[in-house]
Image (cartoon, rainbow, N blue to C red; front, side):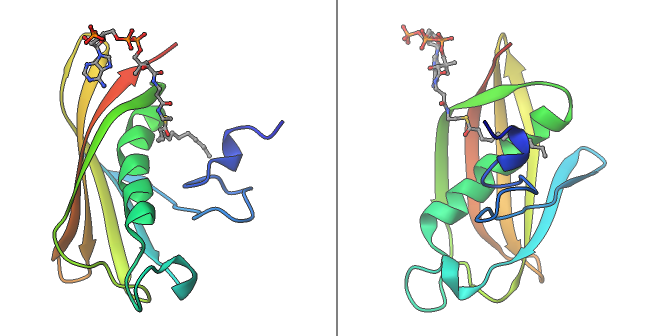
Length: 128
Ligand SMILES: CCCCCCCCCCCCCC(=O)SCCNC(=O)CCNC(=O)[C@H](O)C(C)(C)COP(=O)(O)OP(=O)(O)OC[C@H]1O[C@@H](n2cnc3c(N)ncnc32)[C@H](O)[C@@H]1OP(=O)(O)O
């Protein structure tokens, strides 16, 4: 059974995964990615489900990389502008607050000039 290296969003061993490669920049969890046309919906536009996947990963992976295992309990996405394929994207996740076993997270996807195309807000549930 494949392990976490098969994570669809970040697993380096998943042959059909997104291979997002995050790192911490101070208290932010950041990855940069240019998606090819295989990930589009309308011509030139990244599929909304893929956008949601990247936001989810930025938030859940933030906690996982900090040594906490969490599942997504709730996720809201605001698609502010279309996100283009073939362009450099910056995906960023961070923690806003926590209460008990729930952590409130935020994430964004931005173009190279800083324009935010999508925002995610999630409640992540800490699990053993
Ligand atoms: C190379 C390295 C690779 C690394 C790979 C890994 C990277 C990581 C990638 C990560 C990224 C990807 C991540 C993924 O893809 S994770 C996969 C997607 N997510 C899931 O599968 C989660 C499935 N759900 C659950 O497991 C449970 O429902 C959880 C654990 C969430 C709660 O189950 P639990 O048994 O604890 O609770 P309950 O359901 O009995 O409810 C009890 C009470 O708790 C409160 N409450 C519960 N839910 C919510 C809510 N949503 N908002 C607000 N409140 C909530 C509420 O008061 C409720 O009471 P009531 O209101 O019902 O009376």
